[in-house]
Length: 130
Length: 136
Image (tube, rainbow over all chains, first blue to last red; front, side):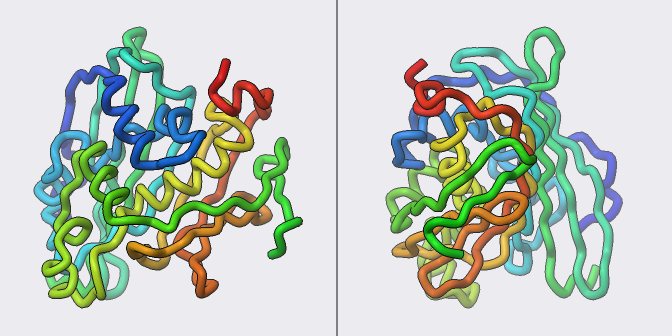
C-alpha cells in the first residue's frame, strides 16, 4: 500500500442517481425492502470511480488485501434521478504491526451542496513489506 | 440470542431477528454489476481458489447491504443515521445469513454460528409501517 497516497483525491465527479442502478441493486438484494435499501447504498466508495479506484489509488495488492469495514453517515436516502457530486479521497494510510491500513472517504453532496452521505471504507493489506 | 431478542440501536427503535439468503452466485453477480465491482475474487472461482478460498465470496458491502436491508424492512430508510460495519468472515454462495439484534446494532451470523459482520447503528425515529415498506 502506498503510504504517500494520504490526502490524495482519487475521484471527483458528478453523477446521476440512476433509477436503473437502484433497480439493479434492489434486484441483487432480492427482498421486499430492497428498493428502499438501495436508496441508502447505491454506491460503494471504493468502486464509484471505476473498479480500479481503490486498487490504483491505494496501491493495493489484491492477493493480500481485505475489505475490513465500511462506515456510513447518512443525512438522507438518495432520490432516484437526482444529480450528486462525489469526491473520493485517501483519508489515511498507516501501518500497524505487520499490516497496513488504508481508509478511503467518499462524500456525496446534492445540487445545493448539502451532504447526502459520507462513507469511510477500510482496507487491510496483510503482511505488507513495503 | 433467541428469536425473541431485540435491540434498541440509538435508543429509539426495536429490531427483531431476520434472515437473508441463501446468498447465490447470481446475487453476487447482480451486486457486482450494480456497483461496478468485478474483483475476480467475487466472480471467478479459479481466482478465488488460487487465493486459498473454496469458492468465490460475496462482496463485503453486499453482506452489509443485506444486514441494512433487514433493518430497513423494520424501520424504513429514513430512520438510519449511521452504521459502522466491521467484516469478520467471508460469505460464500449457499450461506444463509441471520441478522441478529445486538445491544448497539445488529450482527450477521452464518449457519455455523460464526459472525460475518457486525454493525453498530444509530437510528432516528422509526417510520410508519407503510413508509418502511416503501409504499408511501
